[in-house]
Length: 414
Image (cartoon, rainbow, N blue to C red; front, side):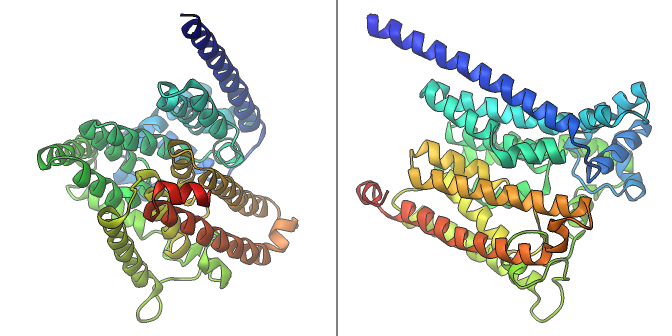
């Protein structure tokens, strides 16, 4: 009885600490988000938000006017943002503008931290607290949402809860959430082969088909009003094909193998076969390897495979932006905590550092032509691309070793 009381008391203290972590992390994001003025991308969001006041569901008929290249889910949030501007007027103080434009990214980041706590809370409140704090005070996550005002944290949140639902035997809910993720950011579609493979392996055909049907209905329910409003029955294909073909370059400031060879902003469609075509060969090989792992590996983990899959795409596929590796963070963090694996934790630290630098250096170089980051941008890109490639090989070795070695061998290795 006394042990039970002590445990409840300890759990309550941990929950209290969690709320303190949440408060401090929120205040930190607000202070940075409001205080740091960043026009990069946020002013595009502002243009979309204000244009949405002229109509939500017909916005894609005016997409070229404001360079709209996002799927529809985030537009619902920007519709609210546009409503705020209708109330305040478009000419607001810089601090107010940064709060308005970074509100959703910061909120998504905070909710992601809360979600991590509740994912592990039943297992162990202490584990939930650690997971939450690691995201709440992660420099890469803070920079992404608060300095930059990007929406990657919302994508991470939706992918996290969709794959957690899949793991917890809720395939229909997971499929709906994954469909919403795919309509939030294009990058989520990279995880489609993994999601479908997991759905096929873990569930009966009937449940798998129900999940796919639920995802299809979700996509149709979201896209149909936009198709009608824009008078375009092929809007779904137009949105995704246009988004995929918007930036036909080897790398867009991403620290990957193309960054090593000075191919930043170089077209990827030249040559026979082109690097772009070879990228699809890579995807096919990756999917084949993933299926092989599900058949032959001693341990399968959606978190380990998700990390390995996205990390490999980032390093070797063309058309990667500087932030596309960021989503791998949530998967390696989950892998480290779910499997209580120290090596994965070190990978999480390494990926946190490199994704932080891959955001900081481009942004600060854009802000000043005379800055160190701009003057030595090419050299820095080569150096950190090489370091990221080394990190890739180390983390891939750890991931593959985990999947193909048994528990005892892994414990000795760690």
